[in-house]
Every structure is written in structure tokens, then in C-alpha cells.
Length: 435
Image (cartoon, rainbow, N blue to C red; front, side, top):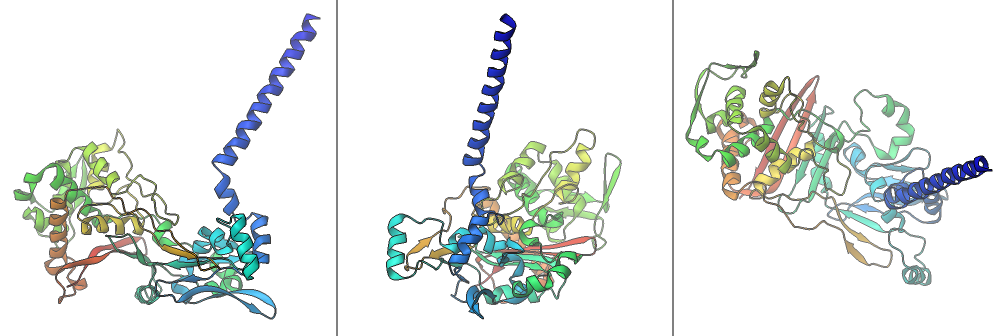
């Protein structure tokens, strides 16, 4: 009898444990995975909803259509304007291929199911607009997007142009791209293309930032060692760190360099010396304040840029490489555009966003841009000094080919351009200057 009671208790305990596990499992999906599952392109209910409504249009900042729905031979068809320049950003929406890009991120809004209360549904039914989704207006400028894309001439790369004071994304280019109007027809070729045109390099690509990271090293040095601005550093053209040799570019001569000159001509060896004067934890802290190792708060998915903590064995050489943007540091072009934006915005952070507003079939406007609250990453004084040195890079340093000589004061745009040529990642990180 005692054995039977023990077995009953054991079975009861097992079933209780299974029941509690089931409750926890369901709670997890309801609280954590709910939004992801609802928006998933594998959610058949969304496709059933799409069959009932005319998907909303996507417009640029000037009201020009980037994507809209129409009828062709009695069937719904998604029509895209902008060609390959908009493909990786706008994406596509197809029952067979699924969804990607903006079409996927704002799918609920475009179907008009994001926030529908019974009263709104009734009004739309009475007015005969219940079979239309909402329209989405972006901050994007189609002319700028096309012009930026054309500059790549089909080469692999990315470009982000944004307003530092607001975070509005004006252009977000990934090259090579694809024409979303032909994505279904070209899918076999696109999916096998070694240049990966289906990937949005501007937000999903991770690359060593190289010398563009020296902006952060410079900001850290000026923040934690202000006197460094008056120091000079000697370099023979190379530096030894724990037995490893790191060299300067060939255009640099051995000699004495002050901070401004070393930045203007992008001296690796001097910037390693400058970085070594900043404590490791302080350098990591500044990098994270600029956005590394943190989830990006943009309204579109962005891969996390990383500044790994150096290992115990190779810690010194890894930090030396990090000071010049090499080694294990990886960044998205959007992250480096934010770095430029922080400097242009007097050292304050700003959240990049691309969705400006949603207009319902009833004409109701919902502004969806993020809060303008910002955090002070570096002081205004430090930001101004870095800004002045960036100007010198274009006027008299390694960036003279990019100069626009008749402009002299900082305007609103900070942008980053990342070219990928063979195994080399070449960056240009800058602030647009205008009267």
C-alpha cells in the first residue's frame, strides 16, 4: 500500500511539473515571442488578411511612391518604383518568397491591422474603406537614394545619410541591390549571387571600421586626457606591441606628430600610443557610449556592432589593434554614421529612424518617429575639437579628394560610406559641411 501511495505521489509530482512547464512555456510565447510570431512571414493568418485587403503604399519624404498595390488582370500586384537602389531597403512582399525589408518590418501597418479598435473598424466599413491598409511615409529622399546608389557603379558597399539633430535617415544604400519588381523572376540568380544583393549591407553587414574608428579613440583621449592635445609623439613608422609589429601607411614619414597631424594623416602608430594613454575600461566605456555592444534602437533591424573585451593572452595587441579599428572590432555602416552624427550633434546621441508617419484609410495621421531624448556621449568641447580635426582631414589630409571647397559651416547631415573591394574594407566617415 505504501508503495502504491509513493507511486501515486510520484506521478502527481511529474504531472504537476509538466503542467507548470506548459504554463511557463505558454507565458513565454505570450509575453516574449508574441510580436515576432504575429509579424512572421510564416504566419498564415497574415496572408489570409492580405488576401482580403489592398496593401498600403510606401512613400518617400516628398510623397513619391516607392511601393504601391494595384490590379493586373483581376489579381493584386505590388508595384515598386526606384529599381535596384531601393531593393535591399524596401524589400518585397510575396506569398511564395515571404517578406523582407520595410515591407516586413511594417507589415501590420501596411495591412491596417496594427491598432484597429471596433469603432475604427465600423467607421471604415460604413465609409467603404475597410479593404485598404494604411500608407507608410518614410524619411527617405528617393533622389538622394538613387544618386548614392549610382556612385557605387555596382561595387559592393553601403552608404547611410542621416540628420544628426533628428535621426532622420535620408538615404540608406546597399550595393549591389536588386529590383523588387523582378525579385520573384530573378530569385534563383539573386539567391546564388556571391555578391549577396539580397543582404542589406548598411544595417546587416559587419566590417572592421578601420581608421574611421580613430574618431572614437580621439574622443576618448580628449575626454580622459585633455592635455594630450598639446603633446607630440615620435614614430619610426612602426610600433612593437608584445612582439607584434604594426606599421603606418606608406605615405607617412618617420618623425614627430602632434594629435591633429596624426589624425589628419591617419597614423596608426601614433594613435596606438594615444590609445595606450587611455585606460582599457575607459576606452570600452566610450566605445559603448557611441553604440558598440548595444542593441540599436532604430525602427529597422540593425545588427549589433561589437567591441570585444580583449583576451588575457593577447590583450595588449588586441587593444592596440582596436585603437585603429582593426582586430576583432566589427561595425555596421549605420553605426559609423551614428558616430559621425554624435560629433555633429554636439556630442549627443540621436536615434536613427526611417518611418515618419502612418496614414490610415480614414486619413488619420499617426506620427511614429522616436523620442528626441538624447544622452551626452562626449562634451560639446570635445565634439567641437574632433569636428575641427575632421575638417582638417578633408582640407589638408587623407580626405582631400572628397572636399566641397565652397562650404564652410556644419549643416545637418552626417553620413558613412563603406566600400568593400576584394578583401579590403575601405571607409569614409564624414560630416557634410554647408553654409
